[in-house]
Length: 477
Image (cartoon, rainbow, N blue to C red; front, top):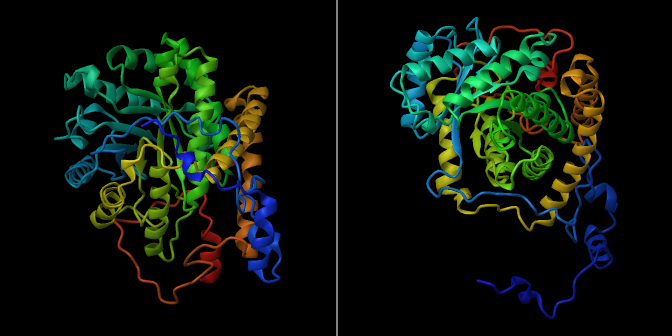
């Protein structure tokens, strides 16, 4: 079909802000226009109230056609401490509709699976066909060790390397920032060694992860999260090239993880901006056009969750999941509603994975390749986010790259400013947290967990996760 849909608008004059504003002011009946309708993000980006045009080139997002039966990877995280518990959860998730698994690996078994050798990891994935259900690693420590263990397991099972599509989740820079430790001199050489081994045996395996969601969970703004993703991607492109991968293979070896929260429109714009930024970076390394499409994993945000009224997390997760799907994420993880309290029960896991099915099969979000294309709101927001994030990325590169910006704690101090700005909005009532600062249930129903999380105090200099509701929940007790 070649007809231009704009022909439908023939004969109608284009409206301008000067045409619209008097009508809006009349409808406000004396209320202040700017105070009532105008909004800006923490980054100072204008959110409207209305847009009359799109920035030049802002709609140029490479959105691949979606599989009608599986529009995105439905990824669930395994946090059980024992291989037996993780295996039971994995099989239940796969039988319930999940298509991908993520192993949260913890050498101590406090916040994830203790699988420090190949037999333990094999037991955790017993009965899982690794060629059908991609497995991704999320290691809380000893990343190189766990990656080697997983590669050994793949070799033991004698799988066809071309059929493996999981990920090792190698992110040494972000891991050091999360744990508040200095980068070891051997971190990068180890990452290069793993990249060489992995790409030779399993060319479709994702090796590196640009873990930008780490910044968001610590209170970063959308611009800061995107800039961290860009700096991380550039860092891992260089490591992949040192490992002997060509530019195209290097770009395809990277997966970016961004957070999706309940602000639907801003999340959609952020994911679209991420694709534009990564394409520009990949192009600068000399990739072909086909290799410039970002592999994007979105996970519903931890920082937006409530512990005092966990049932309201269902609403937040639904909004965030919708935004991730509409924003074009290739894989989505929905956190269980108990994430802010403790390990999920089978019920909490089932509710989380069923949200995928509701979005895909009842809301039909996967039927449209890029539902935000043509929306001047989303394209304008995405363009503004991309422009500001690129400027911040250049500033990070000017400081020596992401590792230097984190080791000097400059980036952490910038994130702390955004965290304070967010909290100020909640304290003044500019923004609200459903069930915590607004519409508080005087007698909220509790929810079962499979044990609480161990106490953990982040060391100085760490990009530690924060929940915006926490201080208000403590004050209400």
